[in-house]
Length: 186
Image 1 (tube, rainbow, N blue to C red):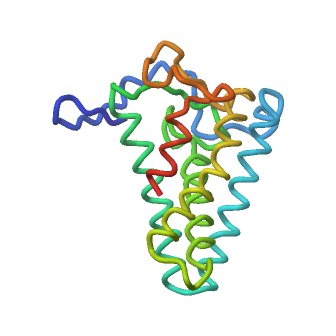
Image 2: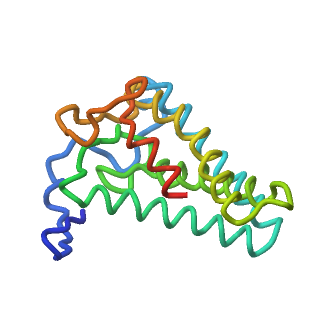
């Protein structure tokens, strides 16, 4: 979909012409293939709607955080899928796919762990400094993301390329860098 070739950004959908993917997968077919993935996908969708309702009811600051989390997370995933040097994971077929590599639930996943972590840290003790709130947001996001990052590949929600040196170091089967980037990204 998007590739970065030494400073040039190239749109190329022809590379996906032969991929076995569907934009929309029927629920019964997904249930028969991977029921845990279907359940997780819709838990993520529900929680994203819940966070949107929360943001809408609490004012423009919350809505800005909600939108920023959704956009930043989606842009992050697209960026890393486009870089050949970090092209080291593949997502499973979800019920809604934006591209062969990007299921809709991934955009919502970013929104979940970033939005709720920021909101919780922002509403922390009044004596916390900006740095303390930032660190709290990173740690809270990590507490949400790490179990997902460990469980996802075990249930075949995505796969990691084992030959990539940048993800060779693992903790409970998940690349250390995959979970650790969350603290830095926040």
